[in-house]
Amino acid sequence: MSAAAPDTGAAGLMDAMYRHQRHIYDASRKFYLLGRDRLIARLAPPPGGTVLEIGCGTGRNLIKIAQAYPGRVCFGLDVSSAMLETARQSVARTGLTDRIVLKQADATAFEPRALFGQAGFDRIVISYALSMIPPWQGVVEEALRRLSPGGELHIVDFGDQAGLPTPFRALLNRWLALFQVTPRGELAAVLDEAARASGAGVTVEPLHRGYAVLATLRSTA
Image (cartoon, rainbow, N blue to C red; front, side, top):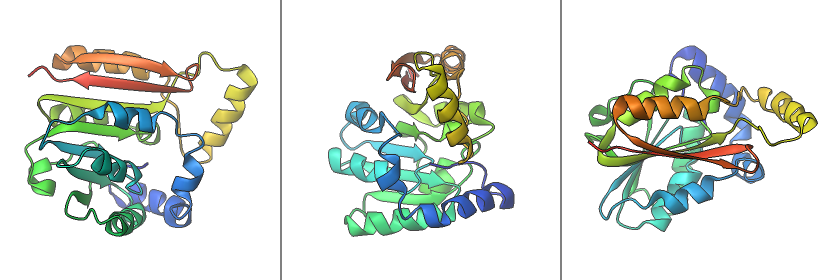
């Protein structure tokens, strides 16, 4: 998933990376983007609620969310026009164009009213996007600002890998670097600090010996 700023550099880099990969992205990523379906199962948006995915990529998660939670309207933003083209095609094939709205936008500074006509969202999802965005802490802060009162931010991404064998960790990180992916080992600490600063509650769950982390931040405003 990709959601950095849509300037020529970031958008161009992502489009170059995914112009061809997007056609096999979902088939290949299911083997190592772990925890996405667990996140979706826990999402539980309220009846008639709204869901935003930051870094929606091919639309895979949004389609599953729309199918799992009828009556909710879903929104997605991404920096890559190539990925959004694939997402729109996938959404159309599943007959969900009336419930999934897609836009190209900057994950660190987006205006939901201008993009989607929404003041905020009941649920915001960030799935394996923070590890691809250099100013990722700002994305977390921006997402928290865009939650509706009582809303929740759900995050899944690569973890600190603390329980993984050292040779596997080294191989994994070399391989991820080929795709401009940098696991955020300090993710849990940053989320704790962001939750304290915003008055949100937070739960962080390591998955698969730290291979991934699943987190939920709950707005109390």
